[in-house]
Length: 140
Image 1 (spheres, rainbow, N blue to C red):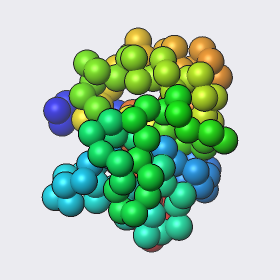
Image 2 (tube, rainbow, N blue to C red):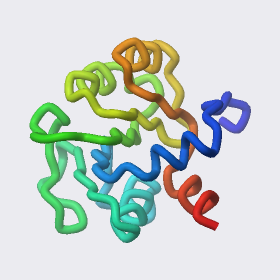
Image 3 (cartoon, helix red, strand yellow):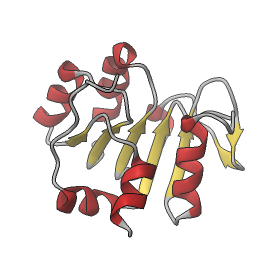
């Protein structure tokens, strides 16, 4: 995994993205030992408005959990994705319809086809980076 290329965004661009607030987390987990739980929990603790998407549960961290992004009303700033790279394409195709400002693929996730689709739709893309790590690194 470590040799996977990483999104080339500048720190300035990442800071701009991290200044956005409404984050939909696809693949958020109830398991507190998983990054798909503790990363969005950290974001929530740091003032982000987190909306979980996970078809296997109704609620995570006391927040209503949606079975798919298409059920969510209102503006979305960032779609933060915790899904295996080979399962990202349909997730991104669905997310694009909600016109988020940014699609963020977590560390270890990279799918060029899905990323190109999002970029063509005018959505910024970040891949193979962790929102928690970037937030900590840039808020020093």
